[in-house]
Image 1 (cartoon, rainbow, N blue to C red):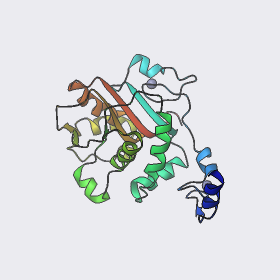
Image 2 (image 1 turned 90 degrees about the horizontal axis):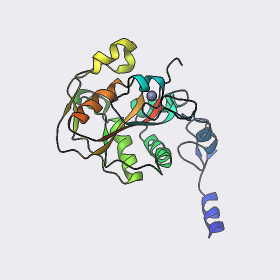
Image 3 (image 1 turned 60 degrees about the vertical axis):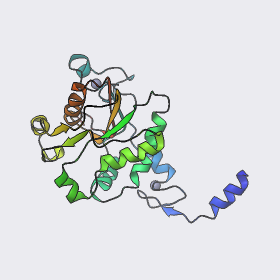
Length: 230
Ligand SMILES: [Zn+2]
Ligand SMILES: [Zn+2]
């Protein structure tokens, strides 16, 4: 059977890897490029900032964020930066399947949340972009992990400038009142899903709102983590 499968696969046309262009049986990246991606490694369980042995970081010991746990796959370095830009701005939605696959491998032994809540876009930005990359990622994760997605709990009521366009100091006030909770009937364990965790303000504000409604366990799942002092 294995040799039959091998023969079938060897007859498949090769597809150029999206990063290096070399012919590959994988999609969208070849195995070598997947193995070269900048994995996050041991990190603080609360905020996903790298720590030597996966212990809590100093910042979380003195000022813990609202979420109980943060899980991120990669450091926000090249080529992840480029792949996330492709996902966000160039309709490369197939990348969510790769990221969701890698994320579900990382989560295989963890207790899973009851629901995935993507960080919403403001309706105006959603119209401009045509899709919300966080919802697309949550949908792919939902298929892999068999967890429902809900984008009806949280909505974005202020069209804030993109966090990445602002100096770090302005990011907190930019996002302060951006979200509104649309329902009070929420499950007790949820994961917020977003593309990148940078200062953490966006996730923190959303998590605060959810916590006020009595959610017991709040996780933040992202593709990549921006590293301080990088
Ligand atoms: Zn490649
Ligand atoms: Zn931390």
